[in-house]
Length: 152
Image: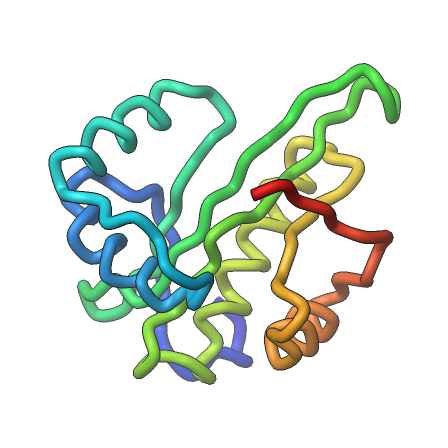
């Protein structure tokens, strides 16, 4: 890692052994009431996702402790010269590890993976009220682009 990280961090693909910690971290997403996901169901979903090429869950690890996670999905298409795009989802850093360069390391990792695959863009969404997160992403070079719509 470069000198702008305060904490030594390694980014690696998540394994099923990471699931208890991932479920803890996902509680920090602050997206409102979510259905509880048991470990057995999480293992089934994780195994199914692991079988889908281009749909990966990563963890950030420091001193053998998982301190962050994110998902990176590659979506193929015919437009844009048939180049794929990357989608980052479920970015979360443990509360006690925030401000130490973990999120920056994770996003730079995702950006590098997209560059290696010649993606035409890397996209993510962030809730309107998460202004600190918006500043964080803008500081990494992300720009607001259009609107994000959802049906819940």
